[in-house]
Amino acid sequence: MKFIYKLFATALGSGYSPFAPGTAGTIVGCIALWLFHKCGLISTITTPFLFIGLIVITTILGIIAADKLEKEWGKDPSKIVIDEVIGIWITMMFVPFTGINLLIGFILFRFFDIAKPLGIRKLENLGGGIGVMADDMLAGIYANIVLQIIIYFI
Image 1 (cartoon, rainbow, N blue to C red):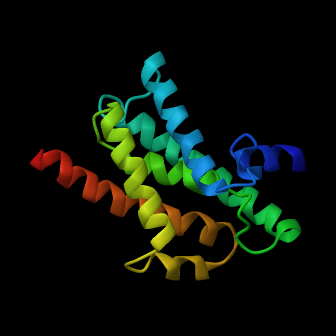
Image 2 (cartoon, rainbow, N blue to C red; image 1 turned 120 degrees about the horizontal axis):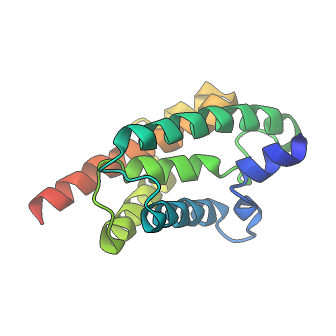
C-alpha cells in the first residue's frame, strides 16, 4: 500500500526529480490536462462539475497520502508533488484550454507557489496532509484569478 501512496503523492515519480521536483509535478499536472483535453475526457469549461469532482477526489487522496508519508519523509517533503498537480488544475479552472493559457497559468502558478505571498505560506502551518495541499490550492486560486483577468483584457 505504501508503494501506491508514494506513486500517487510523487505524481507518478516526478517528485523524485533531483532538480525542481515541484516544477516537475506541475508539468505532470499540465500533461494530464493536455491528455484530458486531447482525449475529450474532461474539460475545465464544458464539464466543470466533473473537473471539480476530479480535483476534490485527488485532493482528498493527496491529503491521505501526504499524512501517511510525512511520518517517513518528514514535514511537507519536496517529493510530495500531488499538491502541485492540484494547484495547476485549480489555476486552469474555467479557463479555455489553449497552449498559451496553459503556459501563462503554469508561470503564474509557479510564481505564487514559490513566492507564497498573500497568506499562502501561513497555510503550510496547518500541518499534515492538509497543510501540504492547502498552500498550493491557494496558490492555484490566486493564479486563476490573475489568469482570468489577463484573458478578460486580452
